[in-house]
Length: 171
Image (cartoon, rainbow, N blue to C red; front, side, top):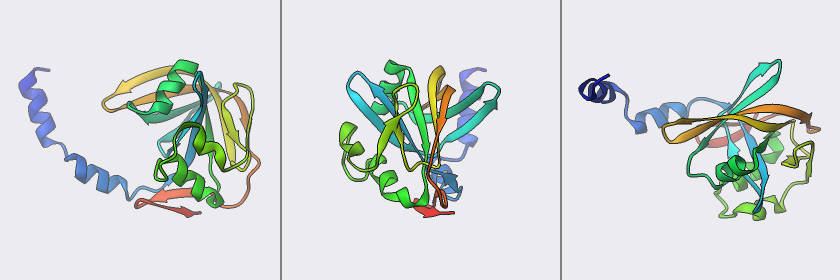
């Protein structure tokens, strides 16, 4: 396409604020995505997570390009998706950055172990998907990580943690 057509298409799209407000109405499961890199453990709260395939088991995670955790994942080639129970809402808040903690400080709460790759696994997670990075795709402000699941864990129980309208709740 030429630049005039591109500009016309962009002008016809909803603005970022309208999109963000509409997406706030979409309920999403809440996860902590972790890795173990040269600088130690790192992690973040994510809702843009999905299965891709069951054969072989494959997951995708969308992470903002400026994230320190993304840089650590790209360097280490591993990550773990920990699906949170409703009781873990404080962990979701900590790993979202709302408490001002970074890096290793975030792991002071919760019980952490590991499966196959060495990426941190939350003992209370409803499910944990230990992955090796299979592909990274750049899409505007984010990266889509495709991970081949090499191990599965999870021993938590009860309702899952859901994020909607900028709040956490159980379901």
